[in-house]
Amino acid sequence: MATAFWDETKDNSDGFWRSGHTPTLIAAFLYFDLAFMVWVLLGPLAPEIAKTLALSPAQKGLMVAVPTLAGAVLRVVNGLLVDRIGPKRAGAISQIVVIAGLATAWTFGVTSFAGTLVLGVVLGFAGASFAIALPLASRWYPPEHQGKAMGLAGMGNSGTVLAALFAPALAKMFGWNAVLGLACLPLTVVFLAYMAMAKDAPNAPAPKRLAEYLAPLRQADAWWLMAFYAVTFGGFVGLAASLPIYFTDRFGLSTIHAGYATAACVFAGSLVRPMGGALADKVGGVKALMAVFLLAAVALAGVASVGTMPAALALFVIAMLALGVGNGSVFQLVPQRFAAEIGVMTGLVGMAGGVGGFYLASSLGLAKQWTGSFAPGFLIFAALALVALAGLTLVKAGWRARWGTADGVRI
Image (cartoon, rainbow, N blue to C red; front, side):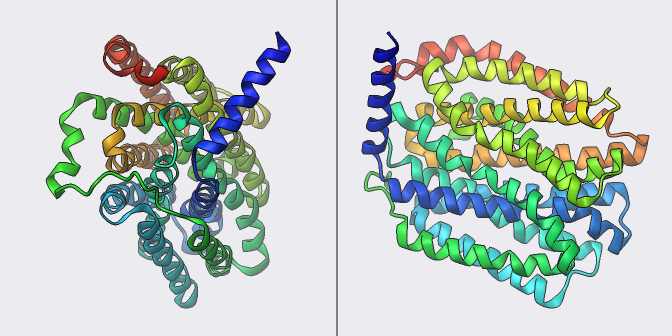
């Protein structure tokens, strides 16, 4: 039995790698990885920036939330560009904007709270890479491998680990403004690799009229998928941006040690994203998401009540593991329902995720300023996860009946 299981697993793995275009998958991952690194860059730098610019807790929360909101809005734009000019060219444009913006900020400096918000908008272009990298990879793969392909490309979430690990140490050595310039170096290397390796899939859908791009919004399924991703990805990126502030303010950690703690949490969520896609391929995205919402709600509610660093860290890791699986699970479902509109749906669902992240990051700052504690922010987001669970319970039977069995794909 064990031999048969191994042979089946090996055949499925070999079939996956033969079914698509590996250089494009690698290019999508690298682009996504480095883009996410700079998207959340203000989070690990926030304690130092706040000292320099004398920011309040609410201003710190807004500063780290603005890139998330900007990325959310720009994902819709990038989703349109992907379907209009192709993902490779759309990705090239976005990367050039981010590199140029960071180089400008490094050259002239960021000297005010307003300046951090402007920089946050520029970094939003990096967050919008989501709407490019995923369809760039996804269009090469058949339905039975969508979860794996989008999970591997989406593992670029791990770029947030790089920011948490290295940005605080580099800021301590060279100053936080210098980190903006240093980030341009790996971004440029990845841009060159991307241009050499990425290739648009030959089966891309024909461009549609502008009004047709938003047609999915007339269907309730699109709104449900957006809501679910607002919780899973919103929780992931909101925590990735906010945890350096939380660990320094709540437990008095140094910026470097807070970065290490954040990196551990983010690594957990990033590592399991492709596993979440593969799990959803195996047991169905709906079943995987139901477990995700329940576990995330319990972990985040627990964070609100614990008083020690080890307990908080353990609960954050559990929450990030659940949310990472949820990210992969949602995007196992999206192409099953909206295969012909995958570009714009990736943008719309990604936008919803960004809005969720903006809410979490900004609400934690407001909670700290208004109540003196981060706990209310965590409790409200835990409640949102339970609301998502209730919504999924409501729609799951209809989804399975209408669109969950094509080509043997399970939802």
